[in-house]
Length: 70
Image 1 (cartoon, helix red, strand yellow):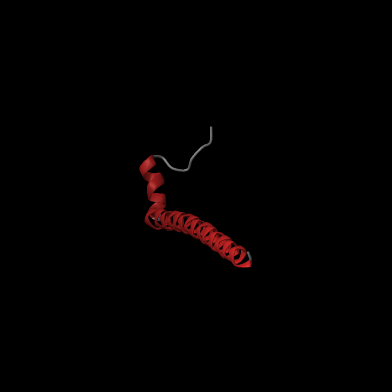
Image 2 (spheres, helix red, strand yellow):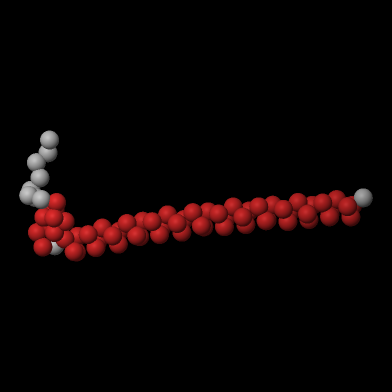
């Protein structure tokens, strides 16, 4: 089993007096990663929706052109 340099869990959280800054940086990092994932997923959904709209429009245009040729 690994040996830890902290005598208790509260010492671990305190991180030798730097706990606030350590955990704050972890929090900001986690928030940034979650926000990036959310934003990427949103962009992907918008892209898929735009492609579907573009494809539907092209199909309507082709259908109208076929009707005009007949």
